[in-house]
Length: 204
Image (tube, rainbow, N blue to C red; front, side, top):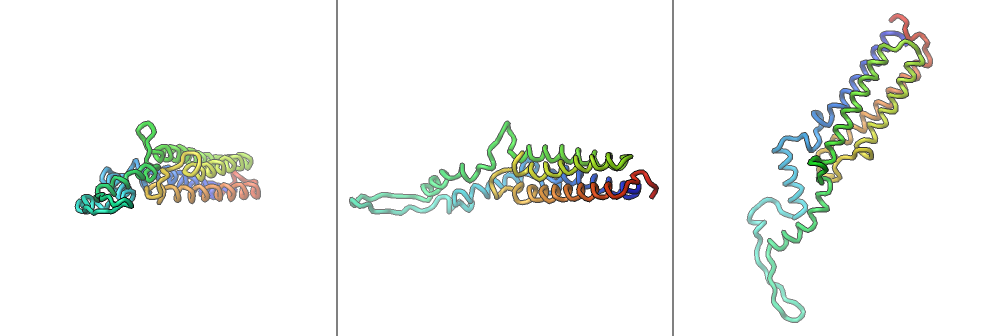
């Protein structure tokens, strides 16, 4: 692997690590990094879907109707009763929003992504200054492991919110998986190149 190739590989790895680190914060922000207005709107939408309320006060108030039971008794039901019964299912709809120590699950997903992103960037720097094929292959192995962790973090290790309506499910999780796959592929390519070309410190 010639010097210019090694430098290009290192820069590519650094870019991948940077993307992993900034994805849950800036590119596709998870719930905890959304603006207060966006977060409030998202919670309102989820609540409305869970209760069947569209935000219209008239709908929330509802109308009073009558029903007749088998014994002839008369009963009344209101739109508010329907709303209250809908609220009973809110907990199951809002599972992804449960808090742990004041933070939602995707907060820890973002922290894991930032850590892995920094590790990948350091690996990129190490590839740029590596002096032997063995060192490059070892770094490629570590890089592949980091890529696998990037894939597993939002799904298994530090999963995002369970509610599919939340932003972390719609964007950050998918992009992190794609970046993890790209990192694993980059590691495989670098390992192959290091194995074929023994001239790690050769001139460009």
